Image (tube, rainbow, N blue to C red; front, side, top):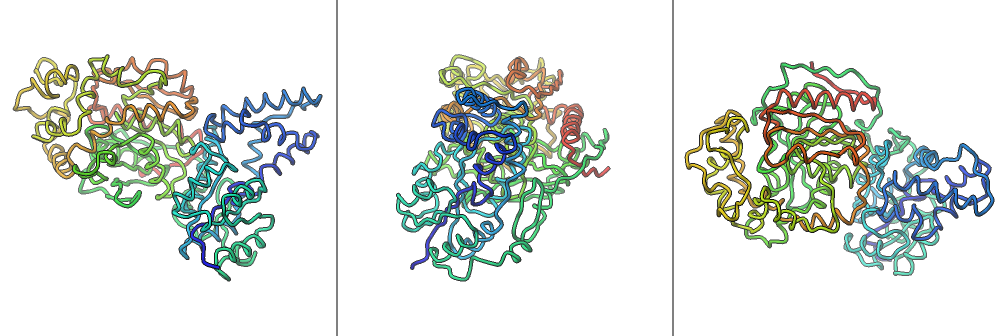
Amino acid sequence: MAARKAVLFDLWGCVQTPRLHHIFKKYEESLGLPRNFIHETVVKGGPGSALHRAELGKLTLTQMIPEMEAECLKEASSQAVSLPPQFSVQKLFDQIREALRFNTAILEASDKLRRHGVATCVLGNSWVDDSEKRDWMGLVLLVLQLHFDLVFQSCRTGARLPDPTLFSHALQRLGATPQQAVFVSSVEESVAAGRDIGMAVVLMDDSNEALKHLQCLAGMQAILVSSVEERETAGKKIGMGMCLTEDPNEAMLQLQSLSGVELLSSEETCSLCCNPEDVPHCFVTIKPGHQVHYVDMGEGPAVLLCHGFPDSWFSWRYQILALAESGFRVLALDMKGYGDSLAPPVMADLSSLLFPQEQLCQDLITFLDKLGIVQVTLVGHDWGGSLVWNMAQCHPERVRAVASLNTPLFLVDPNTNPMERLKANPTFNYQIYFQTPGVAEAELEKDLARTFKIMFRDAAGNVGKGLTLSSANVCERGGLFVGLPDDIPLSPILSEDALQYYIKQFSKTGFRGPLNWYRNTERNWRWMSSRPRGKILMPSLMVTAGMDQILLPKFSSGMETMIPNLTRGHIEDCGHWTQIERPVELNKILLSWLKDVHQKAAIPLCPKL
């Protein structure tokens, strides 16, 4: 038989064991409940059940649990079943986390298949985990990304097994027809669905027998199956009770659960500035033609810094050393379209130049996967702030904590087109001006030195000097800089060396990529309106600046409604460029918050001081 091009594995009961049904059954037995009570209530409750809706991405885990609890109470009443006081859906999901193990035989099989040119994929009916224990799901997702070419979660694709749509999505991405693929599952209903569309199928009860069957179907005799002893030797226990195959490496070592230590910080290091020539510059390929440039310093829990417009990793030059010396691994990115990260050529097809938030979030997930980072603390400024809030809401499994400078969490109104709101607010007229490709680029690229001298100014230093940049009525004025003098002096927050570095960076890429972040307003709105927007429950920090003329502090009012675990910081005498205007004050706020977050989670730091 000809070799297959792809093998698809079911997550539950195949890649991870045991099946959820068996965990439900064990919990029922421990409480003396009728056989299959939980399974019949929450799994076979149809499309309207909480679990079903969560698996389609319509509910997060914390939203699903109380609804599932109510469903169980209702079903118990209808069956005249008395639920014991200790019954708890929350405890059930705690037991799921404790019971599940990776099937090392399947992980090893996937690795061997990939080495022999067969693509592998995981299909999982899963939910967005925004709970306090979401790092468990973050670890699961990271391990899957390390061992399989693709991972399809029902909550992110809108289709769940045994829906043929999920198979179609996966096969299209894998570049295989059903006749070129094998599907492995322990669920008869899913196996039947795979068979119906033309795939070869393996119903898995015993790993060894399933793999023997698979190696015949894949045309790879004597490659896949090793002895139980060999698999146990290759497996390595890591945190959360998971099992991994393959040799241990540095990324995996970072997944160990360690005890907490005291964070040491020093005021003297708070305002030290990075020299671009003295920091390690690294690159990660997200996909062909798209690389991410970042600065990587320090050891300890990862803190990822996301800059805004028009900026660079260099905007964090006063934070990188302070955080690294205090025990954190600092990752400062050139965001997509900036510096040495991907900036599409001007003449490329316009659709390829757009930078929707959905894709930017996925790029960050891929970045974390490539570096082997399960969870990260995100810190964003300006557009970076919008991105980290979206990461916290849509990918909470990978985010330990989130902080935003200046940019509040803006609630999404599915009934109001945001472009109409922008047009109605003169302050945001500059964003309307930015919409037409080529227009703003020409103005901003005409004289890069003048552009950055205008942009990077401290709010207090502009008073009475006629140098204040107005964002209002830009379209009517015919340009963002119209009305400002030709000769602009340097601001105290921008040194000559810093100016030259910005000129060098933007001479490479221009402004097309950065401006494309503004050209997805409606696309971002449609995407965010389609996602479940539950509360952000993780530790969060909002830092406002009293003199920011665009992102006013009042915009953050009421954020506690959506973010109950919100810490606030405020710097009154500070404009938009918080990181470089008030680095000492900001670093005190950041380090105090980071210390508190990691101490409460018993995560150790690696301070240098």
